[in-house]
Every structure is written in C-alpha cells, then in structure tokens.
Image (cartoon, rainbow, N blue to C red; front, side, top):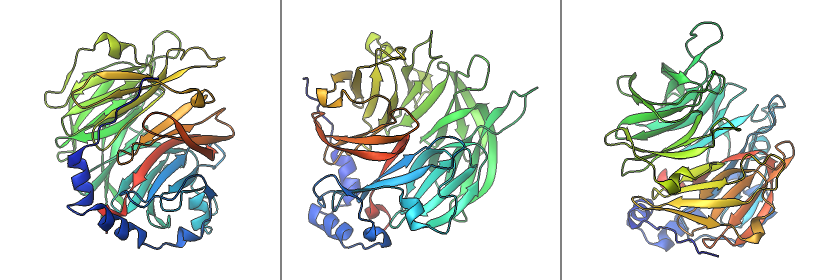
Length: 394
C-alpha cells in the first residue's frame, strides 16, 4: 500500500498552542470539568491528552420527517464515544435536536448546527452540550463565520415564477444570536466559505431544472453579491485555505455527469484549468484541515448502485499535486462514506459511514497510514464532523 504523508503545519500548531508547549495545553484541557463527564459512552481507544483537541463532534443527520437528528462526540481524554449527547444533556427539549442535521461548526466555545427540516440553527455550549439558542432560519444548510457574524445558506429565498425559488444567505449577529440581514444568491445554495473578506457560496440547484452551476461571491460587509462564477452543475461543498485556494465539489447528475472537484484562485476569482488527474476525482465527501490540506473520499464506481464499491482517498497539499491512495482491506466494509475529518495533530482520519441511510451508521478511525484503529456505531447518517479545542475560547 502506498503510504500517505500528511502535512503538519508548524504555523497552525503555533496558533493552536499560542507559544505554549504540549504540557501546558494538556493541563489546560485536562483541568476542565463538565456535566457531560457523567456520560460513560463506549470505550473505543486509549485516552489521549497530549494534543489540543478535547472532542470530535459528530452530527448525525437522521431520517427526514422523524426528528431523529442527533449529536455524538468522541472524548479524547478517555477514548470514549458518547452517543445522542444533545438529548441526554437537554432532557427538557422534548423533540431533541430536531429534523435533519445538515452542518456543524465551532465558534470559540460554542457549537452551531443547522437543523434543515426544522428550520433552526441550534447553538450549544461546546463544553457540556447545553442548549444556548435556537435561531430561526428556514431550510438552513451550511455555516461560515466572518467577523462578529455567522452566515448561513438557506434554500428559502426569492420566488422567480412558479415554484422556482432562489436561495439566500442569512446573517446572524453572534452577540445576540439573532438574524440581522439576508441576501439572495443562486438556486438551493449549499456550502459556504470565507477568504479575503469575501464569502463563497456553492449553489446546488437541487430543485432547479438542470441544476445550478454557479459559485456566488458575496461582500459580507456590504451585504451584496459581487460576482458569479460558472463552475459545474450541482455544487455541494466549498472550502478555502489561507493561500486563497478555493476547493468546490460538484455532485453531477448521478447518471450521465460524474461528480468532480474544482479549484478556484481566490486572489483573482478565476477557475483554474484542471489537470487530467483532477478530472478523474469522484467525490463522495470532502473536507479541509486547519493546515489547508484537502481530503476527498471517492469511487470510480459511483454509478454502480448495486455495489459493492471500492473507495479511495485523495489528498491535495497546499500548492501540491493530487495524491490518490487506496484504503486497506480493513475498509472494504464501508458502503456509504458520508463525512470525513482529519486531526492534523496526530494524523488520525475519521470517516462517517451512513450504511443504508436508515439504520445507525458507523464511525471509523484510521491512522496516517490508513490502518484501522477503531470503529463504533453512530447515529443515523453521520454526515458532519468538527474538532473542538477549548484552548481557543478559554
């Protein structure tokens, strides 16, 4: 097997520890107590307190119409995986997290989750999962932060004849956790990312004839659209690194146009010509770590609906070439890779497998050589993950 070399960014590590050594970070994290310490969870790994992270949060989407979205976390200090933590820490909220969890982001010591079908952005305390606010944003999808504001994509926007509806980006003031503005974008916007004081919005057009193929660029200060770039149909995720590399996934049409990965130069806002290697990337899920490294799980058999499929991991270092790596036989059991997250500190990679999308999925933890370290049962459709370090906000 070709070994995968991961980039460990000294700059990012310096930001994380802020001139403190490992022991100082460890002491600061291990000294934190929380009401959720009582959640026993399932033992999946040895405890780890040498890194900057306290938890890996997993947002399980759940099945639409069943109000079974749920929040899990993996606790680094004792190596335990705790399920359905929002419900357990907020028993007075009768419906739990709500219907269809669509995105999860961390802002200092808070966790923000879009609950799509419930039409709310749920905000909790990252230390103990306690409810802080539910912000109404209809058909909310994905979140990005810039300045003192959270920006949330939404399918709900202006009507353009019949049922043809363009989406919007809602602006939420973090101080009051309330919506203060919104701006219309393309059809059914999905991912959103910030670079250089601009917001990049991937328009999917899932309900629009022929899909949408545009990346909308917004001025968050002026609250206006500045540009639309034509990329590809059915855009999904968008990530940006500090070098101005904007990476966007497109899902294709599921039968005649393949999914793909696209690269925009954020300094000039132009689509970069694709190499043959990049044209062959099929995207099941993707992420970008804090050092700007892109990770994509994909399969050449994406139209083989009967399965089984063989999945690969694609990585792109900032300014580097794409590297394709085959998973070991340990991962032959994976059926529907739905989310991915990488801990750049220890090199571990977490993958959420949705399985049949009806029953509880699984979380796999791999080391940097893609060897399986552990796996455990998650909620239904473990579709979104985020790492949390209390060092940022304490």
